[in-house]
Image (cartoon, rainbow, N blue to C red; front, side, top):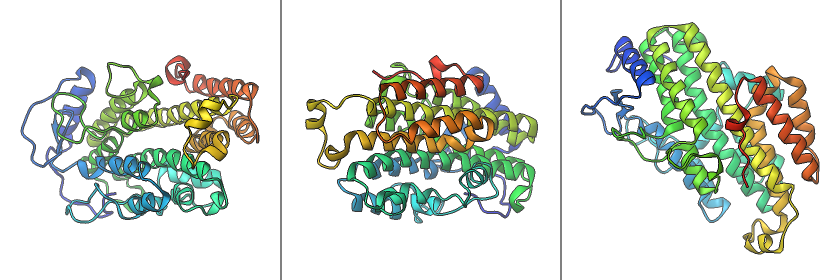
Length: 372
């Protein structure tokens, strides 16, 4: 997160940045040049700062989920490993973000209103790792699957927080001094968190992406195109991100608001997709082979763990959906609250998600692909 006080604009400045991003948003062209900082170039633009400080948070998110036990995962969550601030010494930790409430910003304000209390992601992700709060006394598998879902939620919320910071630099909210070039930069920080790097020939940052890397780790390859380095919805989101950054840098607030709405839809649809995958698995009859393949943590509660993951993924999308489609949100919440979901419940959930996605103006076939 950028400091509340204005700092000197980095190179390129607002209009140059806006022009470059708009050109690439429309043409997909890559501009070849030397970078002023390691990991300082993305999508062919030199942003004058090391974007890996943000993008590498994705590495810590993935690393936390590959640890052998909760204690080791908590160490990554609390202390960090790969992501650092501008001084390259101070860790940019997951817990540092998860334990803060950016209450004046869009998503945090919306989530706090929806949940009836100040929104802290630590109450979900941190609680799953520690085994407290809603996860006190829960099966190891429930905690593990909820933590995996919470880690993805963390990356998405952190990225939208950076966009919200950009909105505040563009509009003066949250006691920020209006600074359009800096607004464009903040939006790009969010893009760095979501994409991890430029996937094209001018790539200089790390090769991981939030959705492609974490999808591969979780075998969620069903809703990715084999040719793409990014999942289809994420690829669309990255393009919107570039356009949003350009509008912010140029001071076009109407354009920024429009792209922000598109990013919200992309986030909600992505997490409904995750939820649907887990809900489908939870509705199946548990087979002996699947039980034998489960590790010691998950084997006592395979279906319960999958249902917990489906619910956690939904909670990421829930504040956005409940604001615009309260009846459908209530229906989804009721279905996911069922103690023993079956195929009928899965079909009802699928229909509910499809209706929400259609109401958002998205195409369900692209947004909610079935995973078989």
